Length: 432
Image 1: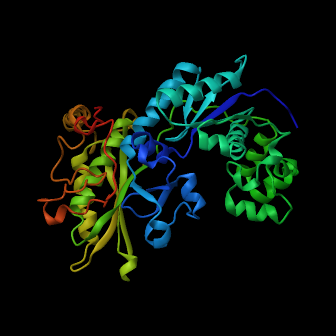
Image 2: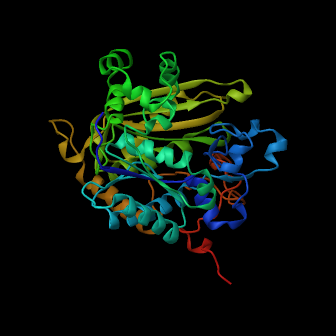
Image 3: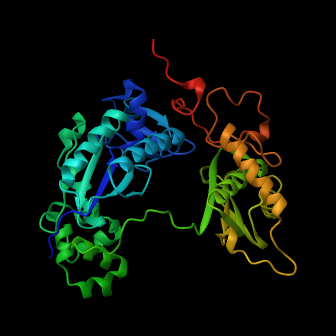
């Protein structure tokens, strides 16, 4: 196995969603805290104290015993807040490192190759994030991205007391010390591979790295073979500084209650999807729509329809017409729906579209869409729209649905949504 100086670092916000909530609400600190996903359904983030009570990620909140539920503070997912905190962390890292890959909302890879003392720089970044943003972080270092991920996990595993105190370590993972990491915690392995590997006596990352490469490739495939190569200290990839073009864009939600006419919801999902698509300078060549029933009421059906478009479009109006056509073909009288979604597919770069004799881009309408996006970016999503769409897709706050027409109450239920501390003037914290 090759031993090499660290080339990559992974800086990860510790229990990120919970940390964001605790940053603005000090009453949550040291208290078992749970963040629920859209519609207040399942647990998507748990504080260490909540995990100590036996709660698991993905557990529906209604299945949590009342004796435990009384001990837990619950918050609805506030993705606008989490995204803003993430952007602040990224801005700090871009000032300190030559290259940064935004891997997820709470994880960022950084380039430390050639830096004289990468551990000291990562410690400084961690302290700066904690002081300027208020989010505790773990840092993993390694010669490959997989080793950096392993180092981050080991930093958490070996620093539980420091984690609770907010003093997190930096761990440099090498092929010589990854025996400390269980194989199921290796990036790219997962529980299914872990069970199969255990049958061969592979229980740690070092055990996986020691397997014959040909055996891993033939039995588990090329993806795990790349993981094994990176565990040996040989990089199979570099930082991805630009997000690759999406193959599809999907927007879906679980409705706050069963609805007989989900057209308003589907129109909103289509509008949001088109906004995201134009933000990436893409055009959609096809789309699909789906609707689900409520399985908890014995009506767990799923129906979907798809249609190709004559020419890849950036026009929300054209997409809405197609969505309406598909939805009407699926809906039945007396049927109620619990969830729906819209997906845009066959995405291409706008400038790569090829017009023909019959179809081509409508430049006037597309310029109108660009103006619409600029207005909404400046004054807030939903300021200007196409047709009737039920905005505020992130969910209504307590009392916001009063006076809202009955058909618009599909919005996800978020009963414990924290204020928009950083994105609404009316909800900024007041210092007395």
